[in-house]
Image 1: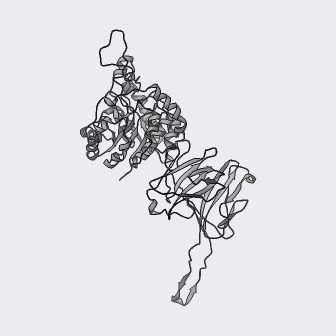
Image 2 (image 1 turned 120 degrees about the horizontal axis):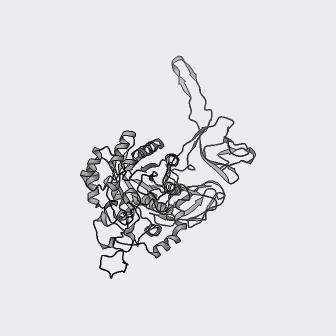
Image 3 (image 1 turned 45 degrees about the vertical axis):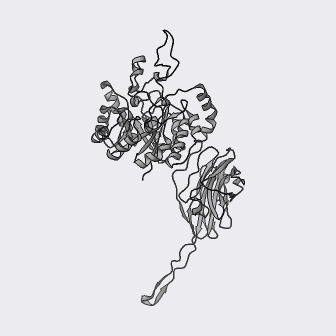
Length: 520
């Protein structure tokens, strides 16, 4: 079963960094002039190309919104926009106007088209029609129940995408003309003024008295706790609404989605504090369409968001490790010199974490001494680069050729093989800890690297971080492999000491687990 994509909204460069750093699989953003959020920080040809480059080197996809209704007089300008999107290397385009879809098919037929939620596709027949028109994905209407989503997903023959968090419109999937009628700002042209959030009452009011209730304002949708179910149904993408919101909001939603995808608990209060209208609703997906779906953003909600901002920023202050890198270095007799660039040669300091395994000279020459693992770190001022090295003896290549009565001996040259593996020799975690999860004081969880170790990055100036073990019972012991780099208390509080790489070993009974800690 494929993992469901976590698709995050981007309305500015800072939001882009927040979405990517917090772990989104893909982002969607608007191209200037032709998207449904004209007041967001949209992208032009140059900034879009840079955004795509930034995302692609990290394995993150970019979907570009060209999802407004267009006028005939705008088609030439639209054609230029399509060419710019195609030239940027974007992975897909989101559109709702069939004229836009047709133009994309003519100019950039290789560019995948996704049917916008503003197409109000709420039936299997609608999804099949989009497939017939050449669309590769349909963003389903937010008004669907879970059984309806399942039915369409299993039979439509193209990918489906569902909103799992963010604002709901009173009218069906954005098909609203209220803003256009009241203020001349069309929601389907990207300029909705949100009049439904103003006080309106269904009851008769005395003449001249404004309404005090908000009978047209829905709470934000949030079905992240059902993300694992959507994944099981085959839904391709979980979409977060909110290009007009903040980087903190995006990071909170992405972090919650990562947990929800795995069926793990997430901090719902933290998500609520990032933004809510007196809570959330799951009414449409659950089929419970009633008065509990209504809500308005109160002063108390706004105040709570302000208090929570510092904690929310921690979710994206450090970039997540997402692209594993393997390096191999074969060292001849006499060692191999490593070269660092970017500073004066005399300013570099070379350090080995285990001088019994290998040694490194002042000029960066690495020499293997015996089999084992160590970390080589080069520092220059406050900057450092660390390389985890495993030293292995090269296999014996002795070959015998008895057919002519002679023997050719190829002796072991003792050339050690060093491979950059992010571990310190122990890649096995006991099965008794297979359910172990490690939670930080910020409410996030440590990821595992390909070698089965938990990954943790600590930067200069970071406070000591308390770690909590979940999924296990009993009292654990904590030990750092290098207390000159990082210390860990008996209770699991990690404290930066110096720069480099160290391994924290967690022992619970006879079982052990490791955390690879990189200290910048």
